[in-house]
Length: 522
Ligand code: AMP
Image 1 (tube, rainbow, N blue to C red):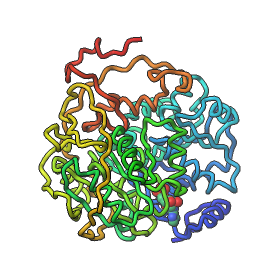
Image 2 (image 1 turned 90 degrees about the vertical axis):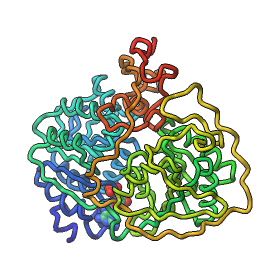
Image 3 (image 1 turned 60 degrees about the horizontal axis):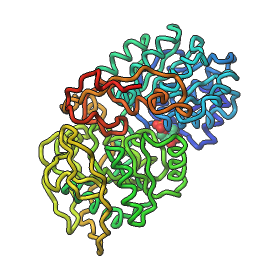
Image 4 (image 1 turned 30 degrees about the horizontal axis):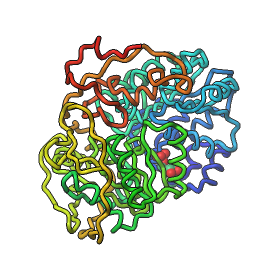
């Protein structure tokens, strides 16, 4: 099938041709004609499938008629992260270059006045993260009653990040007569329920995840003591031909520590996590995309949607808590038909997480060994770090830092990294190439049981001042959401206190912090 047969206009077809795309991807083939017809779409697809163009291309054509009024956007696209929002904006610029459309990008970490000026000019396409959009809405800077098309992208990621209440508030302010396009990589029951509420007689479009045939990723896993992960990572980086790589950690503080370790070992490394300022995030990402940074140590903020051409390796320093995140993480490599490599460093206690991943992807991740490093067996478990002996170490040291179920006193400072031991061990086994992404049906299976989440202090009443002018408690909404997973309590629980979207839990009282004590004082 060709793009011409989808019913797109000549200017859009020309922009697509200039981008070099000749054949629509399956999601584009299925979704574009439906969107052009004005119908609602329930799309089960993830990044890497060409999903963005599947809504951007027809939206450009629909928007070519009519004009926007000041502060009244005609269409709204909600994205869970700033990076994804920025990528969608780039898509509009690329494909809309022959159409005169006004666009505004409302994301956190960027100045309010610039965004207000853009809204004032009148926007055809508004791309936003939920928090920043509500901040503008509550300041009276925007009216949403002229929105004709709503796109909710990466709905399951929104759920993960605790944004669903914000999304519900936003949708409640939109006209009921509108076209809604709803995309999610997975369709757990909570997402399905949401889709049922937001969509009207939608056409369902499901595509197989990418790469099941063409994009192959060579996967491998080594089971080592937690404390040996750092050596294993350095050995792998040394023995592999790493052009560029992302190293994923589950926790923000581990990102920072591991970043320091890699730099001390002479590697050209950068760090990316949700606590960094937006300019720093953007700069790091641009440097990584440009090849000025070779190894990016990152939290899952980088797992979805980031489109870095030709990435050679992904390393999972920690096994992700959610099996879907494994699929997203390794999907950063092996894109566009190129071969990629992914290596997972698993400690024995992460056995339960590996089991869930292998169930989801329907295959066993090949085990590898690194000479000189002890190889262990996986244990059944929930993936939480153990506090015993040397098994609970952190990336920056072999401390065996406490990492049990509850906070136990002050966190230890990471120790100075050890000197790199020479000679480097070589990786003994080259794992087999396996299909990169999970089979679609598998992603509908129930997730493994996770430990209940600890109660967090209640939120302080909101102040709508922008972050640039306000202390942390008054930060814009999406940043607060990143830090406060208690907004996400309906979500399947996992140990997120120190994940990228959560801050430290109150110490000393375990689960039983009385609300009046937990409430921040002003
Ligand atoms: P997405 O799923 O929207 O993140 O897109 C993944 C990648 O596929 C991006 O690099 C797109 O530019 C690229 N892409 C989108 N549509 C096509 C197409 N029809 N042919 C080839 N590549 C495409």
